[in-house]
Structures are given as C-alpha cells and as structure tokens.
Amino acid sequence: MGIPGDKLIKMYRKMILIRNFEDRVHRLFLSGEMPGTIHLYQGQEAVAVGVCANLRKEDVITSTHRPHGHAIAKGVPVKSIMAELFAKTTGCCKGKGGSMHMGDIEVGMVPAIAIVGGGIPVATGMALAFKMKRLDRVAVSFFGDGASNEGAFHEAINMGSIWDLPLIYVCENNLYGASTHVSKVMKLKDIAERASSYGIPGIVVDGNDVISVYKAAKEAIERARKGEGPTLIECKTYRRGGHSRSDPGQYRDKKEEGIWLAKDPISRMHKNLIKMGILTEEKGKGIENEVKARIDEAIEFAQKSPSPKPEDVFKDVFA
Image: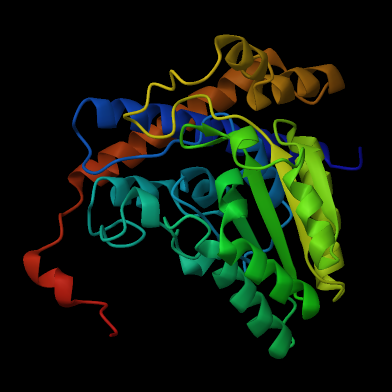
C-alpha cells in the first residue's frame, strides 16, 4: 500500500492514544473532577489521524466543538490538552479555552472554534495568506455534516475554489447533527457532491478506515501544494457515544449502531496490521500500556498544575 510499517504503527498508536484519552476524560467528567462540558471523538479517530499523518508541523488545521482528536493528531502535547480540560494555567490555552476552544498554533492547530462551520472561513483565510506569501504550507478545515448546511461552508469553498487556495475541506459525516439525522436536512446522498458546484474535486472515503483516509488526504494535500486548489473530502464515520456528555443517543436506531460499531476504526486497523505482519498481539498490548501510562502522567500533571488567578483574565487580551 506504499505506507512504511513504522508509519502505520505510529498512526495506530495515535488512534489508541485518542481513544484512551477520550475514555479517561469521559470518566473524569462523569465523576465531577473536570469543569465545563465535552464532545467526545471516540469512533472518528481514523479521520484526524489519517489526515494529519500527511501534514507538516507548519501546516495548519481548524477544528470544531469536538476537537480533542484533532489536537492529539496534530501534535498538541497530551499534558497541555489535559491541563486545559482541568482549566489550569499549564493548559494549551492557559485554561481559558476549555474543551471546545483548545489548540496550539506552535504545532499548527488554530484554537478550536465551537461555532458550527466557524473554522471553514478561517482556514480559507489562512490558505489565502499562504498563497499571497508564496509559502509552501496548506490549511485543513475539519467540520461535521451539519456545518455543510451553513452559509460559511458555501461561501468559503467558493472563495477557496476561485483562488485555487492550498486547502483541504474535511467533512466528518457521522450521520447526525446533534440528534438530527443527515437525511432530514439534505437530499443529497453524499455531501462531497456539493464540491461540483464550485468546480473542485469531491471525494467520499470510508472514514473508519485510516488507510483510505490517509491516501485520499495525501492526494488532496499534494494537489494543494502544487497550486491546483482545494479538495472536499467527505469521511463517512460514526461517533460511538452521544453528541455530548449529557446525550444518551436514544434517537439512534440500535441496528444502525450495531452495524457501525462493528466497523470500529481501531479494531479494523489492529486486524489489518496483524494480517500484514506489522503488529503482534504482544506489541499491541505494549502500545496500550504505554499509552495508558502517558495519560496517567498527563492527569497527574494537570491535577498538580496551578489554577488561573482572577487577574489573569486581563492577560493575552488584544482588543
């Protein structure tokens, strides 16, 4: 498949890290140890990892109200993400962003934007800046199926198209905008079809197969770097839990859930790597243990970190 074995293992480890991070964070929120709210990423790990595995540090991404997976995949340190969730000064946004607004521009992640579709024009603007400055950088915007019905989606893609910007639009279609099924808000079978309205490629990939996502993203990113403009990639995927921590997801059909949960991206990659002789059960357990220890360290770091002081509200204010 043209992907080195060590890179496949690295991608697998990132997916395991995201899943275990989210599982632990969920339990911490339920126990009341963390403030605020969360929108978890379990089940969609192949999208963030498959795309970001093709990016350089200087490339940028914009994210959504469900940003933890994107942050980990782009390289935001796990300790600083955990500290941000605990609202500590050592967090990636100094405890001021929280779950829905985390990021670290030092590794190419714009702090996440919780407004649905809000990151799409921001990524488009950054791609325009890259082109005007003649920089060999690309921008990637992650967004959900619901965002594809926002005006910002259509206006931004039109701008990206007419200016041939170095940009990739990644739609994570997990079938539900909160509790509303995608079939109730659009007649199109595939969101990627909307790309044809703007004269750019629209690609549909299995968002639960990290290899498929990786290959589609690789082609789109190479095309963008050559000055050939943006691509819309629709990744068909499924969140394992509800929209947010307070959502039991009872609006979803149990048969549908069963079908999708059986296509879990991590289980599929595990089986594929075993079949290819790249991974062994023993090595897989070693990765799990390594990841769990890393998350334990992150939690301890976050819990021991100082909380912001009231006067900190006046710091880092520019307007």
